[in-house]
Structures are given as structure tokens and as C-alpha cells.
Length: 272
Ligand code: ZN
Image (cartoon, rainbow, N blue to C red; front, side, top):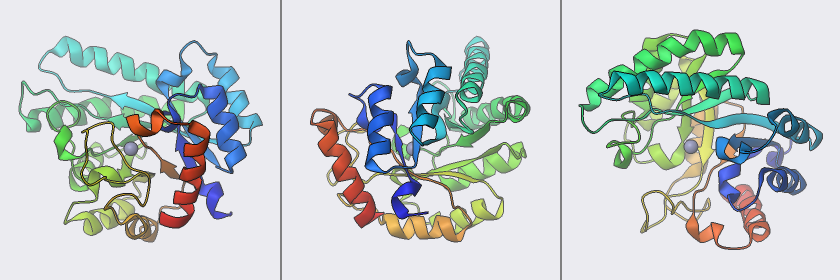
């Protein structure tokens, strides 16, 4: 497999494009895979999207995203489970083998309580995901999101949760943006590999300074993350799947997306 064919792009990376344009342009650029954000499916027949992706010669790597499990209110936890069942069904229909989970947190309760609710919820969904042929990846998020987006903030925390759930359908999505700073990274990536739970690998870069907590991710090579080193660890730990480019950036979204995709390809060759 040539190097570029291991590149997968998240539809959110080129957010101004509709999914049809994204599929065609990613394939033309030489990417091998696409990760579909659910908002890109709005108003589409999932079967049509699946066919178009296959016709373009791309693999569907995952869908983003499920999760947001914890709440002080039991009714909201139930609603989250129902929503995630839909996400799993949608992934199966789309032919996506994996759903990425942004696990959630409720600032009205402790992070420990949120973590316990996350483990319970995923444990409940795991057998259903397994039956649907879809895996679930817990994505640890940078601790700046611990208030309301995710109570799972390190590889250790994600590994612990996946290990406790104990289902072959549940693993971890390693995103360099969220975990690059962690002094235990090497050890926990190795552990995740030993558990057979590295399900996905996401790349972008950490800009210095970062001007927005959500929408200022950098192109690979533009920031301070040693992406090749982390990729090396992940691959040493046994991962040989797609390397997924996931960039949220109001700056890049405001420019020409074809030119941006060209820069992604160059950055992927040089800095990943
Ligand atoms: Zn990610």
C-alpha cells in the first residue's frame, strides 16, 4: 500500500464541502479512506452515500460521533443511550466498522461519577454494537474539555474504561491533538496495543498559540506535536489501520477547500 492510500480524511476537515464533493475530491487526491461526520448525512440516503463512497474506491473508516453519556438526570442518560443506538444502526447501514465516542461529562457532578456512567452506558451498548458488526472507540479528549465534553481525558483513563467494559467491540481512538502532552503516553499506547484496543489514529497539530479551544487545530507540521513519533509508537503497538486527518479550523474553512486539500496531502507526506 502506498503511503497516501493509508490517509483517511474526516468530512469535518473540509466542512464547507457537501459529502458528495468530499468523496470525489478525497478520492481524486489519492486518499484511501473517509470518516463521515453525521451532520454530512443530513438529507441524504445512507445507502446512496455508501454506494458513492464504494464507487469512488474509498473505505469508510468510521463515523463521528456517538457518546455524551453522563448526566445528573436519568432521563437524559436514557435519551443518550437511545441516540447512540441510532448512531450504531446508522453506522451499520453506512458500512462503517467503527463509531468514535466523545464520551461526555456533566459539570453538575464529579468526573468520577461521569466516568462511571460512561462505563455503564458503553457496557450496555457493547453487545448491540457487536451484533451490528460495529466497534466503538472511546476517544480521550484533552483535559480542557473535561467540563462538559469528556470525562475521559488520558489514554490511561480510556484504557481503564475499555478494560473494565471488557468487550472486544470496545476500544480506543488515539488522537494526537488530545494526548500529545501526556508523560505516560508511551506506556499507555503500548498497553492499549497489548489489550488489542487501538481502533483508530487521528492527526492534526497543536498551534502555538492556540487561538480557539475548539476551532483552531493546525495542519500537521504547523504546531508542536511530534506526530511521526506518536505514530511510530502506535504502529509499534500493532496498529496498521488508517491515519485520519481531522482538522477543525475556522481559518481553513474560510479558504479554498481544494487548495487546503492539496496542503493536507503535502503535510501528510512531510509531517506524518
Ligand atoms: Zn479525533
